[in-house]
Length: 177
Image 1 (cartoon, rainbow, N blue to C red):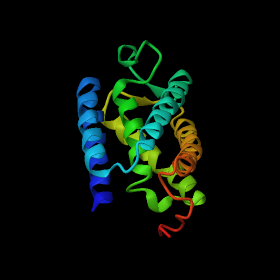
Image 2: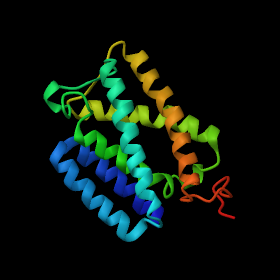
Image 3: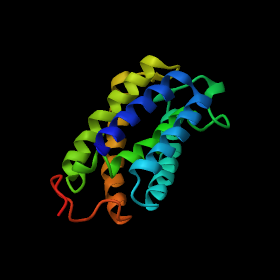
Image 4: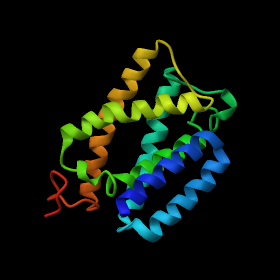
């Protein structure tokens, strides 16, 4: 039940962040993290994972913006160069799923790579359709860059989750031993 709550909570937050903009996204993220901390979080080490994902989000999406893969109106970038606040809120919240609703992927690095290659691309395309961000041209190359980046980021996120003892190293094929 907790995994379902985690997945549903993330999806609701995703829509709030994409549709409502920076300040509403920040408020909704704080509410989501409060709920997550109160009912789902099992270790303070998860905050470390959230901070790491926030930094990765600044760097990765910042690079995608710099390369023209993601195109935002200039006034929506933080300090003129960083991804918008709503997008950074999503990076923090993605970290909350690794040791909860996506835990079944832990230790299955090929699956994590595949999911990283496919799922975030769909999220970026959906986010672009619903917000003021555009996927740069040529579209196919931009999507491929996003996919390759996430095919690396997601497995590394699971590896870090294991190193932080959020997911036991013995978790393989979705079964906790």
